[in-house]
Length: 275
Image (cartoon, rainbow, N blue to C red):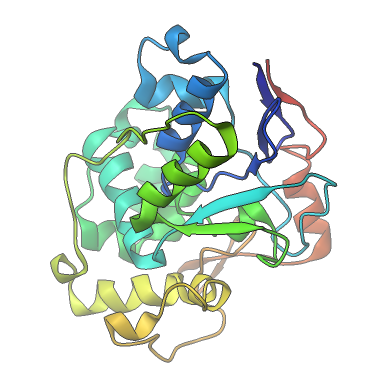
């Protein structure tokens, strides 16, 4: 049994399912389980990281549904605030990407930002950290940047906290017992209560469109709701930062079609991944 996929999706030959990964939503675990079903897991010396070199997670157009003709679509979604804080824990505390993954240190220095930010510093300057590190940008981007603008096309949408249901689902469709490993679990945990009021407000504003997208799965009322704010405030859905444009001391994120097309051209949707 072999596995492969399109630039956005992962398929296992012989199984009627197509997986669309979203970073920080159980992707390492699901990719490993799918590789195991395809008999490929033995090639991984470091499963936590090697799964992503074998099965890529790439961008999609966040403003269009994913009409790719594939069937059995499934994905896993996560509470947006918890996903954002998990990205901080994973990228900053565990992986130390600002000192180990070739960030733009010159730009970071020009912003006067540290390479080992505490949660408040990270959240309050998140658009600048995204501009300095593609790794951070990738892991905090909106789910829509990976699965498109419509969940109605997905036959199964699982919640991150229900990973056991993903294992049961894969067991049913494959006829094999599938256990979901716990890969890429952050060693350092950060909770909303660790944030200052200003950082917490900024985090919720950053996630505001994701809560709208996931309205049937997660309610921001759990955290007190989405605070009122400026429509131009940075969110996880912004397309690309214009590093030459500042407004009131912060980066401006252009949202024109031309910028969107230019951004998507960096990761072509027609690119094939897999074996």
